[in-house]
Structure formats: C-alpha cells, structure tokens
Length: 332
Image 1 (cartoon, rainbow, N blue to C red):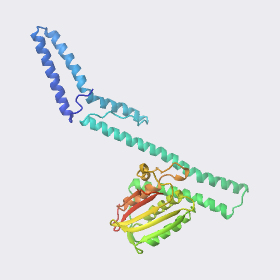
Image 2: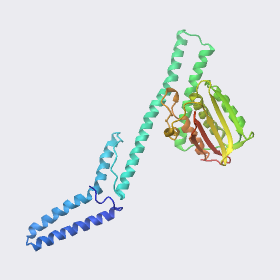
Image 3: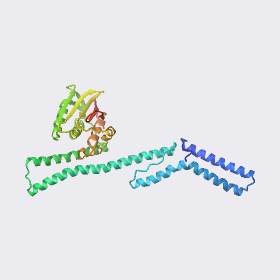
Image 4: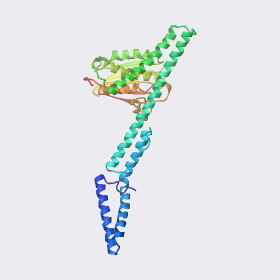
C-alpha cells in the first residue's frame, strides 16, 4: 500500500505528510477536549495516531531506499539480480529506476567479463594445444617437419596473432587512442585484395566481387576499412556451407558507399541481429563461432567513419550492410 506514489515530488509528499499529521493531531485533541478527556491522555493518543498514519503514508517514500540498501549489499558480493520496486513517480522512484538500470548494466558487464575469459581461453587453448602436440611430435621424431605440418603450425600461429590484434584494437578503442587517416581509395582493387587474403584462410567457399560504378572511389582509412571487410569476409566464410558463395558488393547510395557481404549460411535470428555487434557476442554457440570480437570491431570502424552497420533481413543466409560516407575528416 503506497498511497502517495502518484505524487511527482518528494517535497509535495513531505508537505502533505506534515499537513495530515498536524490536522489529525488537532482533530484528536479537539474531540478529546470536547469529551472531557484529560490532556495527559489526549497527547499520547494523538502522538500514537499521528505516528501510525505517518508510517502508512511514508511507506512508499522510504521502502525503495531500504530495498536499494539491501540490493547494494548483495551487489557487493557479485549478485546483480535483485531489482528495486519503483512504483513511485517522485525523485525516489526515479532513483530506484536508475538503480535498476545500473544493476542491469553491471550484470551485463559481469557477464561479458565472464564470456571474455571463457571465449578467449577457448580461442587460445585450441591453437596452443595444436602447436604443442605438433612440436612434441617433431621433437620426439614421431613426424618429420614437412611442408604440410609446418603449414598447420603457421595457421595456428596466425590464428593466435589475429586474436591478439583484435584484443589490442579493442583496448585502443577503450583508451580513446583510435583515429582515422583517410585517403582516396579505389574500391574495386581494394575489395579484390581483401578477397585474395580471405582465400588464404582456405574456407571451402567461392568469393564474388561486385562494384558499381566500376571506378567507385571513397575517402576512408584504408587500414580500418580493411579490418571491417576482413572480419566480415572471415565470418561469412566460416558460416557458409561447403561450396557456397560469399559476395562482397560495393555501390554508391544514401550519400555514401554501401558495402555488403552476404553468405549462404544459416543466417542470424532477428532477435540477435543487434546483439551480434556487441563485444564477445556471437550469433551461435558453436566452437567455430569465434570470440565475438569481429563484428564489434566492424561496428567500431563504421562508427569511426561516422557510418553505420546492420544485419539485413533476407530469406537465406546472412547479409551485413555497412554505410561509409563518401567524404571523411580525421576523427579522434
């Protein structure tokens, strides 16, 4: 029971509480005096009645504060699940709603931290275990250091390198050290070079490049844009079926260059299309889904270019569309 919850100001509530208490005390005193009750009895009765009414009226004013105190103690132990009742419309209710939002944000950060440890540990364990097994076999003379086995070692080392690079990029983003170095960029040869590098990953897919117009030029940071495209191509290659086609398409539109990468994989569920751009979030739980850093970096690159990125609805596969403005300035 919170009769004062509809009032929008704590000062109004306090004023009303005082007015009701004073009025009730006066009424009790007048009635008792008219009936000849002794003042020694009237005063204690009036005080008790006033305190009882105050407890009822003030409940909604103080209970969120008590709940926040209890929730803060639980948060100190790592439990962010408790929510504070926020039915009041005054400043205390607003504080309770803000507290709930803060608890949800802290819970998300804690979950992301746990996911980071789990995902990065998995990503590190796989290539390290493969390298260790290969090196042990080489040292023991079980296998010979031929080209095939050295290529396996190189592939696992490159995988470790990509993970470290992604983590360093995100560290720079958090530190605010990232900036753009824009220059004129011919899009067709840029896409073709990116596809050539994507083929080195040896995903069992075909790649197709489309650029319209043929001589499309954009002013952008080549290195950052390469990060975006490389991550999109890698994701598409890993999630496409054997023999599938990954299409990289660039064209002019909406005041900028539209860059699309499409695959023929299972796609991304509509409810997950915004979350996949968050750090350490993946579109599926398979071992091949990676750490969830690639799309986070892709969105970071588009944000640096004052652009945007989204997952586009399509009947089959996944289509990710990034918009890069045609004119850029150095952005800190």
